[in-house]
Image (tube, rainbow, N blue to C red; front, side):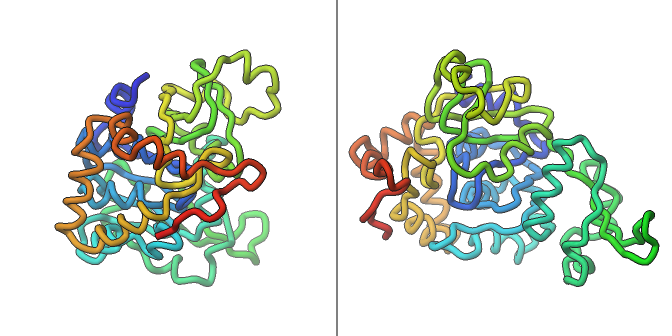
Length: 314
């Protein structure tokens, strides 16, 4: 599908969506920008270690509830500024987990489990301090009845565990290096939680650097991670993770991330930024044209390094 079609078909107002990647790594920016262009609203967003993609969606006023462990453009913004602003001003509902627990929640969702028992957050304020009020949990049909419950281990009454409801994801969105039209995907580098959210979600959108034949991927099936049964839409989107990095393709764009850091500090500057880089272009292809071939070629990784030595960072 083209990006506009995939987002229109599989992302709806009030949906729970999960975005793949990790902070400044293989984040589905192109898809996030299209969600902003289409003005989807009241979204429930799951993103264990989120980055600027979610920060921009929050700043654009699309996010109603955020479940997250961390949101930043590490090395440029230690806490997403639009995210922080929205939480401090009460513009969004926000729930916090430890990062390891969020990973376990996604894996449990992929396995179809209704809840999990963990010990990771015991002893921390994450147990007692809830970002979403208890009455909201009870009244919102998209939310579980409560954040968590600490109780005894039924197999060992002397031990306490933390019970957590597993997220119900309507649509997962991930960016990969290679995908076939049938939905088979190959990811280079770290997988993060992408396989779990893709298998857990009712629908899955994959954006890819390269659209390749199924025969090419089947020639080395042990290198493929996501089967076509999990994928509902494949979108060919070269540089679809920009300004984050995409292993074996391009490094992260420090100049762009620095520019976003400065713009996201101020309401008016942020509006001007998304007016130029999101609303001001028709689609991802026009965004790529605006950046320019020579500029993007300058981000390409050097073979054998996995990154771009000497790349300008600010």
